[in-house]
Image (cartoon, rainbow, N blue to C red; front, side):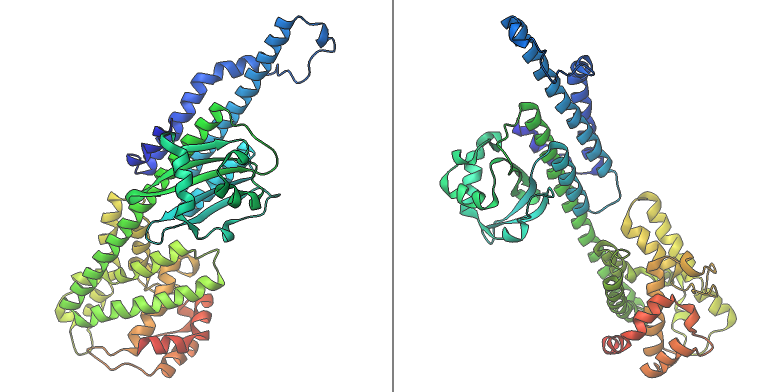
Length: 452
């Protein structure tokens, strides 16, 4: 039965994972739906008062009937659980949030004490507890289980054998070295499934019962096997997304170099603003973690390199002009956010759910918009301007004012800060998100040190 966990080798996208869950849901419904409907509304909770007078064959029949009804009630819970997992997989949330939600749904639906995942580190020869869900009566153990020697884990794998899991209603039947770890956690019954992780990695998912002995039924184990396979597939999908992000970072680095070859000033500007945005978004995330989670912070930092991608179409005669621009030339310069928007939008049309491109589009299109509505090219104001662009607006203006340009020297940091706080006719404090500006001004010396 454990062979179903091997499905992770082909289930490499969320679409395939959803198909797996729907498939399991349909099979459970088809096989057991009729039996459940025949019992529904007729669950036998108590035997009749004259139970002892019933013939033996009738008592046996009643026992079987109750067993079937209880089993099918459990199967209905399994159907509901798989449906809830399917809904979780369709949500736009992070890998960690999906795994945490699946463990929580499983633990609550099946009424276990603890559900957890360990990932093996073959280089360090240890295994690490990376995810855990506990019911409210159970003390979490994740902090105490961060470096378990592989010698201990290998005993689990030997017990799993070809079927891929260990199932015991009483841990006293396990080898002594395993009991020494489980007993302090008050584990009574346990089921452990081997996880196949990306790049040949291994780990396991466990389900502990700490209140009383529990005998897992065959259909319950089948549900857990399906869920373990789904988790393996999520890991594979997360690994592919990580590889994609690394590829995107590599391409961006190449683009930064290419920009520098064509226009040194623009290339250096891209590199400096990326550092400034990273500092600003990190500071803001500390204050508002509910708005800026780790994933969005990384997206903002990495896509900041594309904020001036539209300048790729601006003639060198304008970009490299040492003197003042004419009105016509300035209008051409101001067109670069629209050009950047069009370039990224074309890519986004092919990959509409790509978060990297979605963030890059916001960055390139709106970083010259002003909080008070006086910016360009669209005249957006306030929170109409996406957060990534509002962050970039501060970093972009600060870098532009403090660094040398072909047509002028950079401005002293103290003078730049006065422009941000009092205005200078061209740069005004009303141009920027007041909350973000307050963070920037509170830490302005850090920006000065970074810009050197």
